[in-house]
Length: 149
Image (cartoon, rainbow, N blue to C red):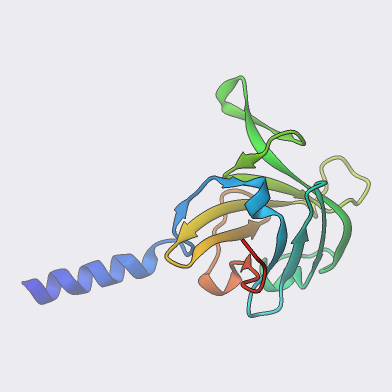
């Protein structure tokens, strides 16, 4: 019985979303260089600008240019009701944010959603086309360990 229970626990753990639990991150901890081993690289600046390359290595079904310059990021904040959110330039922390690819359209199909999570290795970010998607472990981007924290 213990062996069966152990296999069940292991099977359920492998089905869980990669990246750990949703986490709130402060802007000061978010700013910097993020990457994954597959080649995705994102630089988030304190002025809410961003540059990125290899986005297809973090979002496999991304159909837009895999490099971004002049993009913007903004934390999602509650807007009145508990089910209404807006992207804010003034928020200084959050557990998710929007990445705008700066295509000139107000709601571009190239924009990404970013969910902040934390596991035993620290913060990580799951970039997706919409907030119903999840990431595989190799798609998560993590802060460059060479940077001071």
